[in-house]
Length: 139
Image (cartoon, rainbow, N blue to C red; front, top):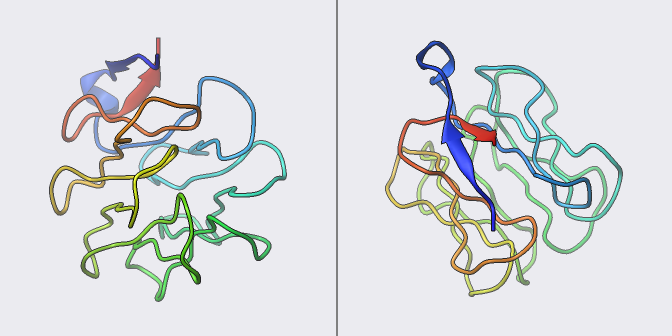
């Protein structure tokens, strides 16, 4: 099971995603304050941001479970086609993650405007946030 701890107060400004093990669908942030998702290796369902400070999700290649943003600066996740592990945002500018169907690696946000990642079930590449406004860090 994934475990997280709160980051020091000096860095608790963002909710960065980290994966405890290398593999597809892993989230990494290259710098504090960006909340951008990067994957350390090429593969399906990888998250990339085209520019720092945008927090938009793009996939370098078409495929299932890819995240797209309809506009810059929104940080909303959309999938161009229905499928498992797709990310949807209920409203622009919220950066919330929702999945249209239950399944592994689905993203949920407990409240609008939090940008927190939750998974409805345990599994690899799941996103969890221990608390609102906290930065995720591996123990």
